[in-house]
Length: 114
Ligand code: 5GP
Ligand code: ZN
Image (cartoon, rainbow, N blue to C red):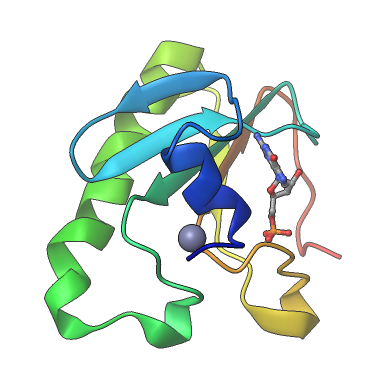
């Protein structure tokens, strides 16, 4: 995906504050953090939205959650609590069309989200 900003980050064409990486997954700090901890976990495979996830992606999606578990340990927010969010399409406010899990913590959050 030539014009996808997260594919460019994966390729090293755009810098990021990397926190975790393996063959399938990359995790880095959000450029505009909305909480003291705000990490994005992305698959290296380009998938635009949750709507495009295939059955064969199930291990990859599972790995995103396993990575989240490691990230919250690194950030020290696992006990106090944190939020994991996928925004999909217009009504949810998705702006980057390469699936990503927001991992947010370090402050108390309200419910329901706006
Ligand atoms: P969405 O609105 O699609 O759920 O979330 C996209 C997120 O990507 C936003 O929180 C935004 O701040 C973040 N973001 C957009 N461009 C960049 C970038 O170039 N680098 C990093 N680290 N985060 C980005
Ligand atoms: Zn992409």
